[in-house]
Image (cartoon, rainbow, N blue to C red; front, side, top):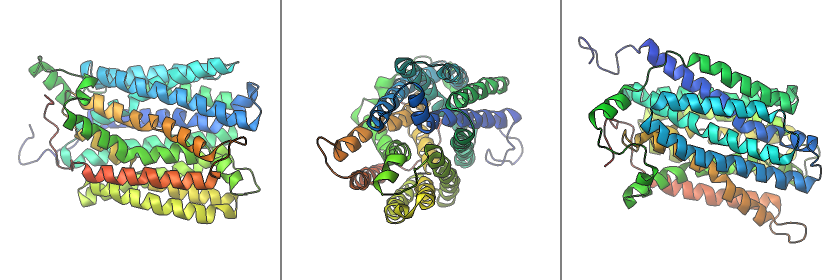
Length: 422
């Protein structure tokens, strides 16, 4: 309880709460550093392992990405369960430790199969960090400051992708993996002293008979499953952009007729500079409008406009390509609001499961999305659409689904998080 006339929103934040926000933000920084690192080092790392044919670089790269995202999907479910059963802090610790060690081992692979195993392990570990961190921050902060806290976490975290882009331009591919792993291990030192969510502790003590962390609860009853599906689909266009436009930027640039080769590290650097700006903007706009859903819908409309501008301006040259990637990245900057919404849509006994699973289901959507993209553009033996047409047609479909899903979501900006799912 607050003292005097101060309301919870006006009460100064405790040192432990501030530390929790810092650890969640820096954890997501390292998370994003590793998550996008494969996109940056895909070509040089595979060439070092003997994969040199252009078509193989695309197909083997996609297979590795699919394996990583599958690991994230399974890890999202597993760590979500742990978050609701063991606590947010323990989940955060295990997640960071697992993907840090996998990162370090990635630097020493000598064969593609080893790369596949370690990208799966890294993906599994990466799955737990964001959901546990956002859930912890959302439950520790008062309602009016919840969106600000999660925006800080996401904005600092997303700058990890910018750091990965810079590292990719300066360091060898295996040194980049070593750097990401060491950063994660250093982060574990900060974990000491971070408080567990009081809401989680109260619920565990007072409601011993309530199911906690059961992912099957997301599937039943149908209304709860529909709520979860709408949350995931509202953010799916982000990973159309991340899974197709960011990762396969070099192939898209070549198809546009740009003479200068498009550098993966520069695509990630410029794109995620835009994403960071977009996330800060989305958090600010959400606070101003006092609405999560209207913010998401607005950003989806901006995403459609930015993709249209991308295909109109990017073919002029490499620098224009990078600038437009930055603009598209900014329009995907509602990730922080999406994750906040995912945590707010579900009760305390299922919150970590939902908030951890939802982002990884979105990321896993890149597997069918990239498969559809590859099928649409065809092969030399069975050609389909050209690369440019396949990209914008698929983009329109994904954005349309996202807008319809966001329109159907309940508004959660003012929702009190002290409730249970039965």
